[in-house]
Image (cartoon, rainbow, N blue to C red; front, side, top):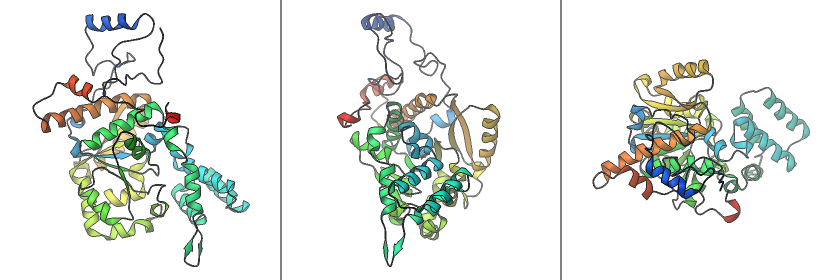
Length: 382
């Protein structure tokens, strides 16, 4: 019997990422006997594909979930739904919005050509996106059109049916840490995490910078099961912030800013799928500009180690921001297994501290079985 799977992870276990038995010819029962009679490798030594695991950094894996702020970038969204070009980058998003605007005949030919040219020339893409949004949101007297909203819904249509298996596993690990006390913020416009959580029976609220009261409560850890979208979320177009003027109300609110900056000084930020998030003007204004002695802090960024020189350059550049750059492997697929083990390690420790007694680690994994398809509509199951 031969069994294929979209990703080499056994979903009957919580998070080791290792199949109970190899099923690649021969009988399944014979494979089980093999597992029982042979010594199993140490969990952090060898993965299900035979590759040696990256070691988990001690200063990261010993963190407790409530000490973490997870920063979700485009790399995560594009891994969850790779069929959606708008999730991959600013350029992909602007291109998708332009295509939607052309489909709905919302731009003059000359305007469309001008935006296309700006894209090709790689001008400041945030400014290009801001100008495009303004163009798609004209005012007539005191009424603003909803064409931009129409374009957004066209771009992000039917996300839940475009989520792939490996990406759901990444979201599962994020949700696992959230439910153990970690805060989450994102630069992304999509609500993939919220969609996934709902199908797992957990309701997450989407926040944006237009609601100062809720942002303050989030920073004070009173809204742990909320996702702060610092640029906004597509389901609330009025909360989308691309220009500094859009978050001036938050910057002027000293109570909110004090609590937000305190997070960067007292917690550890863990950057996932983030290429240039620390260069993002909104992120800088919220977390970096007013925080002093950043090099004394301890934050973490998981990246793929593709080019050794670029990796070293990034590692050096992040030190003055208090960020340790860590390689999860040489391939994008390595992130799933690395982050999976990391989330388990952290949450297991939290359970040991907060639970009654110290549970057996394997029992903990088995008790927290994960079904990536649970709750998804039949026609969305991959």
